[in-house]
Length: 452
Image (cartoon, rainbow, N blue to C red; front, top):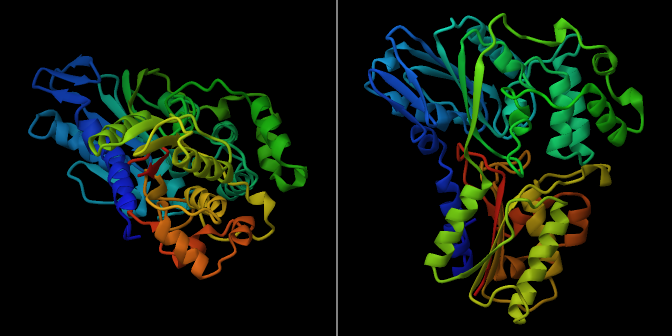
């Protein structure tokens, strides 16, 4: 949307400051230093003899910027000439780089595994297994990596994995529960990608998109030893699936079988792995907070650990607006409330879910709560830092006095749209969609509430 109120304009400015702070290219380039004698990655120094090759692999929505960051850090060095790579990214993030190939592993706004992703994962596994002991591998990991790096374990097929992923997502499973299942039926997740490396040293640079920054869950932990078990995955499926026949037989057979060598891609040479988080939702929240204070706002942050449902999140933010207006809130006006995290949308509550995403549903729920209130000088913005929100071309939505008035004039039924999880067309009619395009980073969602 084009913000029509000063509160909305400032909310967008604050939100963009948060996203800019987790610029993937900058985060990576700052993490790598190189000279003719040594390579330093996140404080770890490796002496260079002059014959080592550097392989860069990985997957995620931030992969394009992260790969560019590696090339920027190495530019002009001898090691740059011995560098190659392959990173799976969304199709709208592909660009030409000098040494690293960015491969379109899925279409834009389709956050699920594809045949292209399987092909890309096989290429990465092959390149990593061909490394020699003295070579070095950097794995670039960011949110969305689970879907962008699919490698189903036989007899599980891509179609089987897609079915299970869609079923769990539509049933309201958390990212932790979803990844628990995906790791157990994958040849790369749960540390199996690192096991495939033929080199002695592997460095994973990670931009976190999960509450608490758990290394084993971000992109399903391709470089982190899996602590979950097949039994854990079975419990997740039993929690969300009432009819066992909805799950392919191949998945049940993998989860109920004893571990075998077929479930591992481990090479004869075990790499020493260094996993390093270089950016997170907390990074974005801190930058947004600094920008809000610079604009004269008293800031109250709810932190990054906000989950629950999108509807509950929207109602909570609306209630905070009303409390601050009444002088009973946690801060005084002019106020800025910030929150991160990633609420869920339980699509199982609607037989035919409409079009939208969790951030759009947050804004729609807030609009419903404030429908009968007489408010001005406020804004509620909720947006995915990756520029994507569900299977749509929007990052999220923005609610201010003008969009609320437009919805009232059009006599739109917020309850019906919410019930149908159909937030996108509602916000499109009121000019409330936040569209940014792919940001090439991903640290969950960032929400900005302004009360002037």
